[in-house]
Image 1 (cartoon, rainbow, N blue to C red):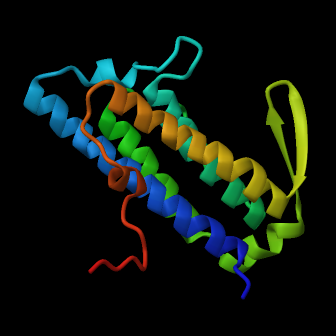
Image 2 (cartoon, rainbow, N blue to C red):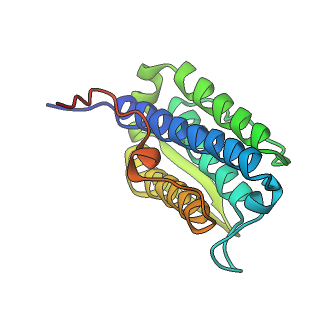
Length: 174
C-alpha cells in the first residue's frame, strides 16, 4: 500500500496545529483563571539560546505553510511575524491549516520529485520534494511543536501527551 505526499503531510500538520491551537486555548484560560500575564508565557524559553514560545509557534506554522506550498508549486502565505497575543498566534495557526487544506492534493503529490530550494541561514539548500518533506520539514515541525509544548509544561501549564497529539483521526478506544 502506498501513501501520497498529501496524505503524509496535510492531515498530520493539521492535526498537530489543531493540537497546538487547543493548547493555546488552554493557556488563555489558565492565564485568566490564575490572573497571569500571557506575555510571560509568550516570551518564555527553555534556554537563553532558544526561541521564545511565540517564535516557536511562528516557526511551527512556517514549516507546513512553506513545505505544502512548495510541494504544490505555489507561493506560501507570508506572515509579518508580529503576533503579540495568544489570539494572534491562534489565528496564525488557523490560517495555516486553512491554507494547506486548500491546496490541490494532486499538485502536492506531483511535487514529490520537484526540487525544493530554500534559504537556511546564509546557505541556499536544495532537496527533492519527498525528501524535503520527510527529512527536513517534518523533523523541523515536530521539533518546534515539542519545544513549544515543553516551554509550556516547564512553566506550569498542566498538559499531557494527549494534548500534544490532539485529535487523532481514526483512533478508537474501548
